[in-house]
Length: 437
Image 1 (cartoon, rainbow, N blue to C red):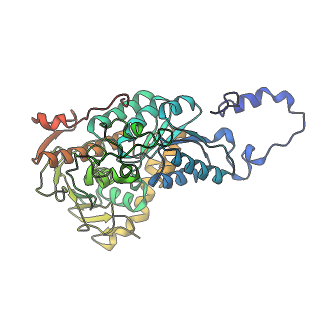
Image 2 (tube, rainbow, N blue to C red):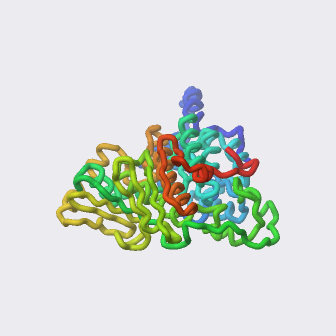
């Protein structure tokens, strides 16, 4: 447990001012404390803790710690082994032994009143609930995607961020990468003429229809080594199997958002941003008779189509988006040196388009930096709760269309399917006590 008598970060300057009478006494103050030589003084650092960091989360941990104005101070993880891995990494990076460890989220959030923000990189099932609990506890949130398991969870994240005035960023980092920003802005600003079609990449593994069974029971590890009940969180009780804990939860309905959610959490946000529909969702979903949703046509209220696409028909690489307009098209995906375009002349606009975007939004072309800047300014992030919720609503609606094997109409204002009670029941899932919001 942290020493509650220690000088808090917030109280540093106040205490220093009150002690000014001692200024005549000679003592040494390190330059880093004063912010000299480019160092950020402790009183100005953003204090960050982590929840459920492993795999992709270790990349995010390095990313956030790479910012000089961040101090990562604590890890909460229900697996003792992983807590120790993160602590060792953080302590080695800082040359200290100061990274605190916590096995349980509620105690962690209640005790660490000093934290400004939390980094959440659990599995999908915990993203929304952990975000809600953290924001209620006064923390800003950067969370990995897919950021909610249902339409109802997404709405709960939006309402929590509004009520508690928290900054929130979901990890759809391509919204901050120049190639994707170029494509989005080319479509959004009319440089391609009237946009009639966007394409959004869905993952080339697994299916839209997920497994509803569960793996055979294996003896649970000791609770102090790994808390299986907490791992399940809001999901239905299932017997322990070590495969779940090492990523084998993907493809199971209880824990996953399908091949559509795996990449659609990224690419639907990218496509919807270019269509200027970042805070809305399609009004119609056309069922396609395959196992993945490849080729599903969705329709926005303005008549523009967004088509789900598997493979490399419209790009090469992963997590791609493409916009087709009356006067040209653009596309990008991971690993591109530059976007694909219908005419080389379009690339002549690249620097101007990116420069205008940065000038208009004031955003860094670095997703984590955009989050940290907004922690300081209290402005909205590029992947704010509304952007997350509406793109994830598209994910969930497309999944429900595939599960019910029929086309659906959706009202994005009411956030309800039109004339389909069965589809509407799938907008939420029961949450297991005590893991509720």
